[in-house]
Image 1 (tube, helix red, strand yellow):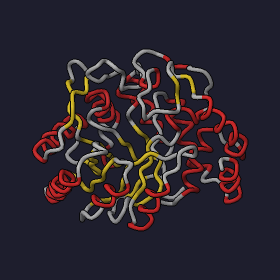
Image 2 (image 1 turned 45 degrees about the vertical axis):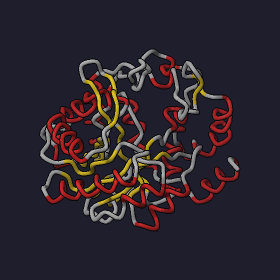
Image 3 (image 1 turned 90 degrees about the vertical axis):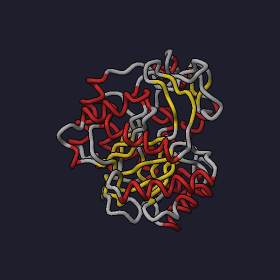
Image 4 (image 1 turned 135 degrees about the vertical axis):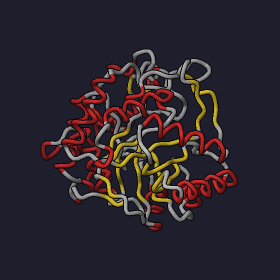
Length: 326
């Protein structure tokens, strides 16, 4: 798989990135509902990141709020002494209490963006962030206008190289993309839940499509039952309204599991695992896509990274998946 260039920037990344939400461990909202993926081992996370790099992954996406700072710290630890080998993306906009590991609110002001950036640089142990992303998907366009301007200031100051918006609204993404240094948009997309409007925008405007939830929060890894998803501290055990792939307890919702079963044979052709087939579908969907699956172990890192060697689905396989899900 060839590298991807993020938008009109000169930033090149591997066609597969790694999302670092899960390695933040347990954290919660103010009502005590889990926002993380359960318990993690920081040593295993560091080993997984380094193994991914050995297999060709050069792009790592995190956020200040993941684990209320823990994800950024772990990523910084893993990349110590190797910063020039990778591209780091992180996000801001959420307010949190590190001591209680709680997300306490949101702040869309320019002043907070600068404070958050300085804090992320410190946790990551770096002098610059390659892609800085607004993490408030429903922020107003008025706020976004001010934040886009302050991001351009950050670029001029050498604190970041480019910026993007993490949102599932093409109108908001298009608004942010008017900025001189906007390189892409982060949005949800996978073989079960396509995003035609967002991908069309990326093609039209030359933006990178940084794809979160490429494995549908683990549904497309092929694990049946609740598995570890039912554990306390895992957001999938008490899924919020937007997380409709799972029922309470982390059990896959029957209607979505049926759709996975419908395409399983095609996605696992040519020696792929189900997860690798789901990533291959995204690469076949658009050359703009850079999926960022999550991970919590070296084994998961190896499985996801090996998908790079297998490449996209063939045209015939992609068409067959479309027919099966029609």
